[in-house]
Amino acid sequence: YAAHGIKIRAVTPQNEPETQQFGMMPACCWNPETEVEFVRTLRGKLCENGLCDVEIWPNDHSFAYSDKVDWQLRAFPEFRKNIGGVAFHYYDGNIEQTEYLIDKYDGLRLHFTEAGPRLYDHYDNDWCKWGIMMSKTLNSRYSSFTGWNLMLDETGGPNIGPFFCGGLVTRNRLSGELSYS
Image 1 (tube, rainbow, N blue to C red):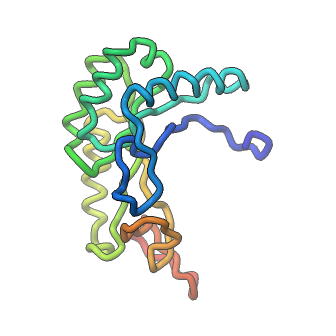
Image 2 (spheres, rainbow, N blue to C red):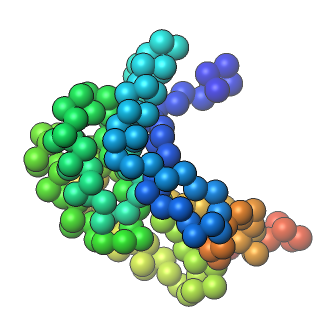
Image 3 (spheres, rainbow, N blue to C red):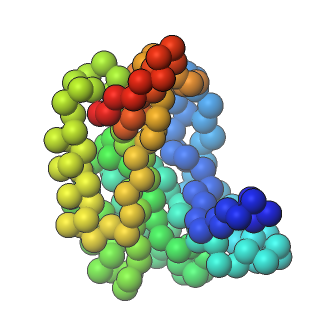
């Protein structure tokens, strides 16, 4: 990536580490201790390769997992030193469940890393939903908001899972026309 002028600023070690997706799509189930150990190893490998400044954002899962993150930070003090923030999705729980982590862990940064429109559920007018979610993210002192997916085609592709995802932008495969969620 660096050879092409792309600077990697952060990585999430595993998307949704505590879900098995009911066998409907690729998954990797990690218990909290495994995630902590992987992050420790990843931090070492990044530093060995001159990438100590790359942040690691664990969890990368629902707001409902804030207590799991709290436990990891309490049980493994070195965990805090190895991460640059914590990533959350909006699928379960609510953003308010995560806010205490910022105060409890002095300056811990939270990142909203996954959510996006459903292709067939009010796609043409769900902009209000995303405006509210982005506002909540900023009001809850999150450091970043990442939409998922940026652009897909009119069938929700490419998609390897069972969900009918839409992009924030849809590009018609035949006409090339763009439409926006």
